[in-house]
Length: 307
Length: 73
Image (cartoon, rainbow over all chains, first blue to last red; front, side):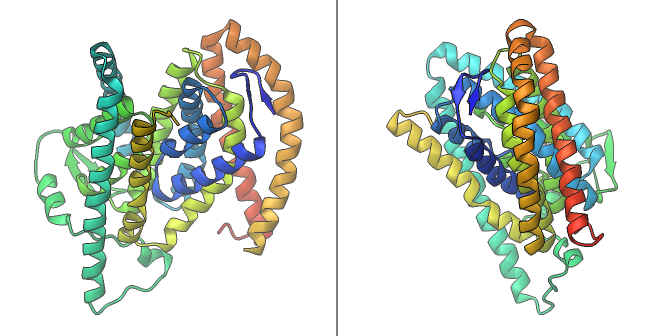
């Protein structure tokens, strides 16, 4: 099928399958999946600028479907999502400015690659340690939870003592988040969102790989709510990103629409699946995603082939 | 699982109709918009992707209900 906006010939079945796979990941983990979608579009010959912009547009559509499903399951904290969107957009702008600084210095590719590898691997290592420790502790306790959807939502973390200490920082204004069962300083929410936005603007994609874990470990949001709220927040920030890329001529909306057809089914499947897994298991299953991202960056660094 | 496979088949028929209908007619118009009115194109792109997502979500949820005899999950 010929897509006239990006002048690319791509099979719609391929786009649908890619959308489906990324939809499942997005619905289950609350990530945009750009670390897979970008290379998947590049592989079939779509220019890098179109791959980045079109992927953002597709993320908007997929996140709408997944967030709607998560909302029906009670997994979205709208209040938190709106506050986070402010910090994310500000952070994304700062990240984009930082890219310009390194571009002028002439070492943008090297710096972005090294920073992303360090961040991806650190997140994976930390989440592997934390979720394994939490699951080990749960195994030791005699009362083993039943596998009903309601019990599966019960959350626990080996990092909880640090989260509780952060929640004790009473820097006004304090924000009450009844949906998540948390009261926390507005500035901490803003900081978490800003860091996520900074990673998004600097490293590309939606930065769900850092925002979802930050919401769990720093803000103390239950994993299921972090996944749903992250998706809601991504709708706002990715829409902003889509607009800025579209006016630069980097979005082929026809490709994004086709990808979204597969993503709509995948995102619902992923979102529904979260009901059957407890928070620590979702976090443990998340561990390979940043490693795959790091693997792709290492490959592009050493092969010189930008996927 | 059976319901999901049936859903996928019904969905595939709808998608094929969608390809040959909507995308075929939208392609030329969007191409013109992208080259002549880039700001309008940017807004239309966001509205289209959100609109399609809302419709698809409603279609898949409706199909699930239909195939599972009124239950949403």
